[in-house]
Each structure stands twice: as structure tokens, then as C-alpha cells.
Image (cartoon, rainbow, N blue to C red; front, side, top):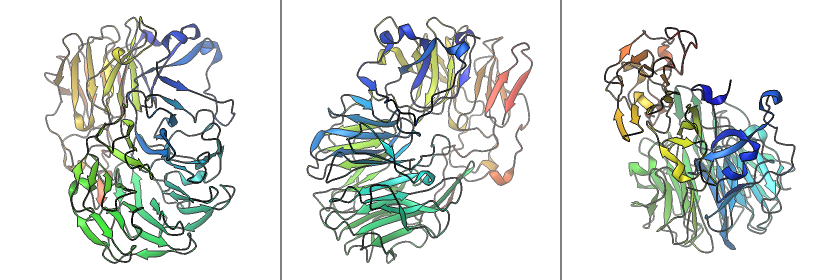
Length: 598
């Protein structure tokens, strides 16, 4: 059946894509963004039925707003050149400080989630990329497949091992030898494994040695910092963690900080002055003063800890909750290369201290959720920030930033279409908003003028009548649902149950909603809209009233309900709500026959 004949829902990642006849590709190519794919057989072709799809090809329809990123780096001697790694969009490069970006991983990388980037200080042609992000979301984080290496500044790539590590948080390269590399492997977020810890190669990735493993099977390396004055001195942060669909456990006996003074041959655990029970940790040794080491620590009385004796003793300098909010998702720290009293913490928002970590101020940035910061070691005015809207570059120490609206790397949970001509696409972009995008325009390309924000939020499951798409319904976490009238541009909140249960234990709430709770508009009657919680809701009056059509349709397993986070920090945004409806569908022949999946 042709794609536009009915409202359908697809599962997609990265930027929105659509099928189009190959003759239309040139006219619909987006401006300012290019993607290169070398002739390389390491990436499997997407399999299609050639009879049905043989004359069709993929084309990018946007949006150009960037997707989540946790890794970015630059070349000290080339202040206009930077690399950005996305959690679903691979590796990209700019040579004009962010005005234009191009993909350099397509055709080489087998996976798309980039966790870390490191450029050899002694040879900028040598680049290492660790796959799999450290920010372990339950819904939009994907596995990595180890480490890739380039010896021609990103033109070509080779896979050099550690495929089973799954999530890599940091890669550090020896300043004088590009073949000596350390990798902080965080490990599989869903289960305990032996493939995590600090790995070292002395031969450019031909062989690897696990030089420091965690204290248990769920303890992996969340950060690694190298002394800029002595590369044999290393500080490693370990994180004892594990995810289930209903809980993120962040903390345990395996969390802590270790130090090596002999290039990783031996390690000592650092403990004096640090909390006993810790969760996620970020660590950074100051390039300006090797005795100064900073650590951002998740703990009951956590915050920023500082050592002024190279890790022997620690003291809490700031317990500001802003620098440790939602610890499992953030907790990256960067020390300024020129001033030992300047330290940056990635969180929501971007934060900086200029007094040695005692106080922090917000730094205006291009997105609220921040994960990574690279500072040029030779000129600290040059920065690149990795965040949930992509990456942005500053050439004035963070006072101004480049645009993020030129990076088609967004993550989408679901996509719906209507029957308009040209048809439109609807979907929720993770950590941004829902969007409505035209599939075709009268101009030479689909640009920012051709897409608008939709109803709901980042996790929106969008419902729309294929035949009359004036009214659009978009969901959000915790049961939020909005109606957008596309003619008047009025948005109304129409929650079935007017209660937000953020941070509440789910075994105590009246209703439970999935992170991407489904919204479905009847194909028989556009006035009929369904919304799924743990029960199925129906409205026939545009959300003025809702009727529960069922009891609890899930197994209602109380052992998989409760708090969303433990043992230190609760997680209450809604991503861990379990025992919920995840999909709604209606018979194509009978309006009274409905199907739900839980």
C-alpha cells in the first residue's frame, strides 16, 4: 500500500528520512550539509524488497536541528577544525568552526553512537573514536562496537577492537606516541560483564590489555584523565551501575577513583576525604597544576571534590545541587588548561567556576542539557560543547556559540504521516520538541522554513487524522498530551488525568504512562482519539473529557514499579515507568475492534 494512503507509524533513528523517486533527489538536497559514504563493505546495506522499492531512494528531509551528542574534540593547531560524535548520528567534521558539517563515518562505522573522540597530540592525522555513549538512557541509548582509528584525519577508518565494551566514556592518547592509547570502557548498561575497565594499547590498537578492571561485574570506567605534564600519571573514575526498563541503579561499592603513576601498570584507590557510597563520578586533573585534581561525585552529600596533593586527600568544595542533578545522565568535568582555578561542569545548565570550584555560575549555551566540553590546550578561548541539541563552538571563551541548526543528527522515536499533498511527517525529537515537516517544497530544498514545532514534547508519539490533519495530538512523559490546531496555531493541554507524577513512585500513582505513551486518531472518525496509560483512554470531544475504556491492561507487576532511581538519586522524568501501554492500533475494517500492546 502506498505510504501516503493512511496514517502509519514507523520506528526511526537519526534525522527524518522519506522515500522519494530518485529523479527528485537533487532538488530536495538540504543546503550546507553533506554526507560522504566511502565504498566500504563494513556497513551492511538496508534490505528492501526490490520489487516494491526498487525505484525509490532515501532522501533527508530534516530537521537540521542537531541531535544528542556527548563527545567533541578539536585540533589545537587548527582552530577551525572540530569533530563531533552523536549518540545516533555517527561522526561529523567541520573545517570552518561550525558553519558547515559533513559526516565522515558513513561506510566505515558499523554503529552510530559515539562515546569519545581523541586526537593524537603528536600527530593530528591519528584519531581514535570510542563507540557507545556514557549517558545511559533507557530508550534512546544504543550500543557501541569498540574503537575506530584513522591515520588520515578522518578520511578512512579501521576498527581496532574492544567490540564487546558496549559503552566507552573516554579515550586518551599519549602526547608523544600516537600508538599508546587508553580507553575507559563503561560496559554494558543492562547486565554485568567482564568487558569493562581501563584498556591500554601500545601498538595503535592491534592488541589491548585490561590494566584496571572494576571491583564487580557492573563497575565500569566513567572517566579517565591524563596528567598533561606526565602522561604516566592517570586518574580513573569507576561507576557501579546497571539499568533495567523500570530502574536506573547508579551507585555501589564499585564506584570510586583510582590513580596510576606508571602508565597503567599498577593502580591505587583514592579514598581519603571522599564519600563511602558513591555513584557516577567525573574526574579531571588540571593541566595548569598537576597537583590539582577535580572530581564531580554523586553521593548523599556529593558535589565537587578537590585535591591539591595529586589525589592523596580530598575535600568538598561545593555541594551545589545544580552541578550534580540527574547524575547518571551528566557528571562530566573539564579543567581549564591555563588556569587551575577554572573548572567546568556539564549539567543542565552548563556551569563554570573561577574560584577553584567553590561557586558556580551558569554559562549561556545553545542547549540546556550539556555532556562534553573540549578546550583548546593552547588557547582556551576555543571551545566545543557537546549537548542534547548537537554541538556548538565558541571562539571567545563561551560568550557566544555557533549554530546547532545545521546538523541533521536528531533521534526520533516514532514518525507518522498524513494524506495531504505534499504529505507531512510528524515525530518527537529526543531532548528537543516534536516537529511537523513537509515532505516536499516548491523551493530547491527542504529547510527550516518547512518545519514547525508540534504538540507534546521530545518523547511525543503523534496522532493525526490522515484525511484531515488540521488537529494534531502529541504526547509527552507522565501522561501529558496536547492538541495543536494547525490553522489557529493554538495549543491546548488535554491530559486525561490532571496530575503530574514526576519523581513519585509508580506503585502509588493512579495511572502509569510510558515515556512515549501512544496517541491514536481513529481512521474512521477523526473526533475519536485514544491515549494509552496502563488503561486505554478515549475522547470524542477533543480532550474536553476522557473515558477509560478498560481496566489495567498490563501485568501490573508491583516488583517492577516504585522509584525510578536508586540507591542515591531518584529518577523521576518518566523514562522508567513500567507496566504501560506502548502501542495502540485499530482494525482497518471495524472501528470497534482495537489492539493494544503493553
